[in-house]
Length: 68
Image 1 (cartoon, rainbow, N blue to C red):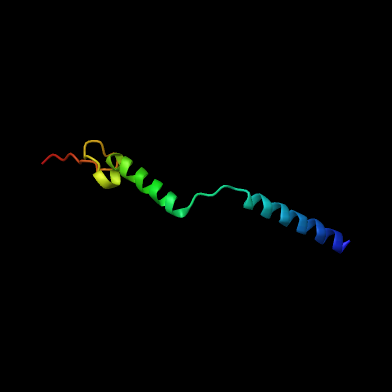
Image 2 (image 1 turned 90 degrees about the vertical axis):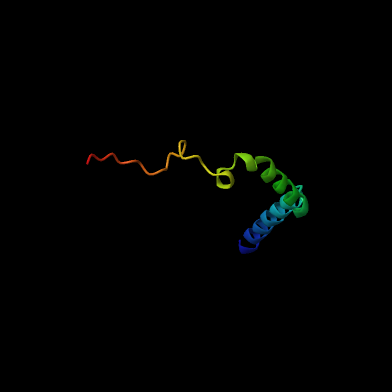
C-alpha cells in the first residue's frame, strides 16, 4: 500500500512539474521595460505623483464653522 501511494504522489509531482515547465515566461528585463513604460504613460493620472486638489479631496479635514 505504501509504495503504491508513494508512486501516485510522485506521479502528481511529475505532472505538476511538467505543467510548470510548459508555461511561457517573460524575461525579467522585458517585464521591467514594460512596467517602466506603463508607469510613464500613467504618471499624469497618478495622484501620488501629481497630488490631489483640495477641492476634490474627499479626505481633507472638514471646515468647522464657529460664531464668535
